[in-house]
Every structure is written in structure tokens, then in C-alpha cells.
Image 1 (cartoon, helix red, strand yellow):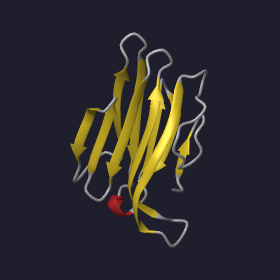
Image 2 (cartoon, helix red, strand yellow):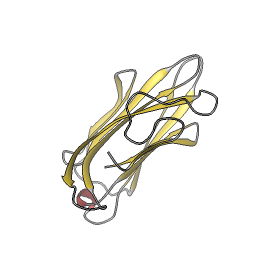
Image 3 (cartoon, one colour):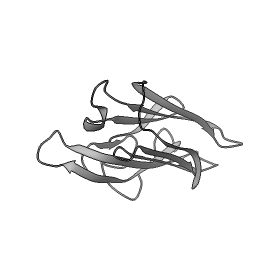
Length: 142
């Protein structure tokens, strides 16, 4: 459960949510890391990452991100409904961005960025960053 950081409340790898952030705009709950291929050193390789956080003050929405590096499955859900669901076997992009708007009355721009190395990306850490309205709210490493 190392390598997880949530800005605005929850400690790394802790379930149960935080105190909120930016005047209650975002409350963040990190759910868990999925499996580990190597756990002998500080350069730990993790097969997947899952993170979730709440967006909004008056109109609350739950955003969840899940990525499994071994199978290439990536899923982004808002309130339990898939917004993005894909399987990636190969990619030429070093940074893949997923952007969407959450909310009807109270709209927030959500962006996920998944970074990868040029060579042997499946065997190296792949950082994932979550932004709400241009501010970093959570990050993890797959």
C-alpha cells in the first residue's frame, strides 16, 4: 500500500475518506492496490492501481479509477457507471489522458493522466494522476 498519495484528507492507503479539500470540493478515499509482482525492495512493481474520490459539494459524485497493468484493463466510473472502459495491448503515447465533466448543476472537469516509459513499460512503474478542475487530487503507481 505504499506509493499512494491523496491530496486533501486521506492518508496513503487508508480507507474511509478524508476531511475534504479546497473548501469541501473533493473528498478522497483510496481503496487499495491490486497485487504485487515484486515486493523485495523500494522499487516495487505493482500490477494494478485502484483509486476513488468524491467530487462536488452540493451535487456529490463518486469517481473511481481502476487499471490492471498485466491485463491492460482500464476502467473509469462515475457513480458506478462506466465512463471509460478499455483494454490496451500496445500504445505509442507516453501520456494517455482521459477527460470528462462530472455533474449537471455543479460541473467539475475531471482528468486522469497515465504515464508510461518508452521501453519495457509493462515492467516499469506507471504513475497515474487524477485532477479535478486542474488541481491534483490523487495519484498512484501501477
